[in-house]
Amino acid sequence: MIPPFEASAAEGGSPLEVRTSRVFGTPAFFRLWLAQVVSATGDWLGLMAIIALTASVSDRAEGVAVGLVLGARVAPGFFLAPWAGVLVDRWDRKKVMITCDLARAALMISLPFVDSVLGLILASLVLEVFTLLWSPAKEASVPNLVPKSYLTSANSLSMVAAYGTYPLGAGLLIVFAKMADWWADSSALNAIHLDRLGLAFYFNALTFLVTACIVWRLPIHKAEREVVATNGRRFDPGATVREFKEGWHFIFINPVVRAVNIGLACGLIGGGMLIPLGPTFVRQVLGAGDPGYGSVTFALGVGVAVGVVSLTLVQSYVPKEWLFTGGLVLAGSALIAAASTSTLTPAVFLVALIGIGAGTIYVLGFTLLHENVGDALRGRVFTALYSLVRLCLLLAMAVGPFLSEALDSLSNRWWDGRVAPFGFNIDIPGVRLTLWLAGLIILLAATLSWWSLRAGERRRVIIDLRDDELSNLEMVEHV
Image 1 (tube, rainbow, N blue to C red):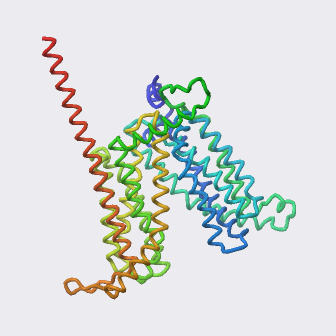
Image 2: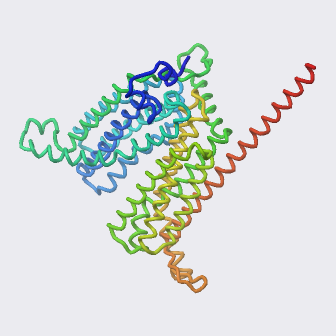
């Protein structure tokens, strides 16, 4: 069977399809990318609307209520994601994506009528379950739509779609607030909750429906997998457990997959601490307020964009494994250097370097998995990756502030908050010590990833030598 992208190339196409293929790899991936742009825009809009609705219906501390609702978005990933991967590899991926989009659309339509924090927690749990199925199904389908040489560009574009649509979602929420003012006095429209948040939820539902229509036209097929004996039953728990173990066994023994998971997971433990500690560092160490923090976050975003764009230029000249570990080294080193500064200007420049490393790590991590994981295992591998990413990011965001406070107390007790190596006075508050530790964790991730990749290369060399010896032996025996 000819892959969709090979068939389209062989048959030719319109000038638009040719231009699309040059940028996106294939017209099919271009349509999938459009579906992701539409869906991600709705996701950001829906997330902001859920947070706002939680704050408005809560009768206690808003922060606690919002934390519970957002925690419900994270919790399913810890318990259900590995099993979701088994289902994605077993079911028709197109049907999975369409069903999840339709279910999420129905859920969004019901949210304007929810008036309790408990209801929002349950809705967030269900919403995340369907997202856990949709995302791996999409990732597992990408290599079947894009030639291998375009995978890096495809993942760069996917990152743009996932995170570059945040401003669109925020802008739409402002637009809906203006629109709601036009009919604020209409009791009939108020009955169906056509206020600011209601419009946001309805629009999010529409984005899911549009995404389902786009996916319905895509050439996405069921994963190629070996037939597993189920003893004549439609559902065999034993076969499901075996497939679950098979996926995790592959993750641990495959050196590339192991390196990517170590790099992304441990890298996020270090980099994730920057999220809760960034405002504190800018205020206490750099002596800058909200405008200074805005400059830092803007520099991070610019750095990520530069890193993603640069990959498309250098991927053909430098091995992806080198670039992946190099991105980890750059991010870790730049984080340590940024935490060592005491003024805003150099910190902004160094944070931009962190962004370049982060963009490189994200895009190449997904690309390496696409290139090195067979179609039958991709669902399980990507759900495992999503589980590790969520766990490590949540761990970093939860532990970072407590670690900073603990190190701050130790610093004040042992060194009075300042050291003077070589006659230079250096303040060492807890936030700076924590960010130094975060940078070291990222560098440790780079070391472990490089070790795993090198082990894989050595194993391939040994296998190639054995194959050559066997070939020579067969030739001698033949003579």
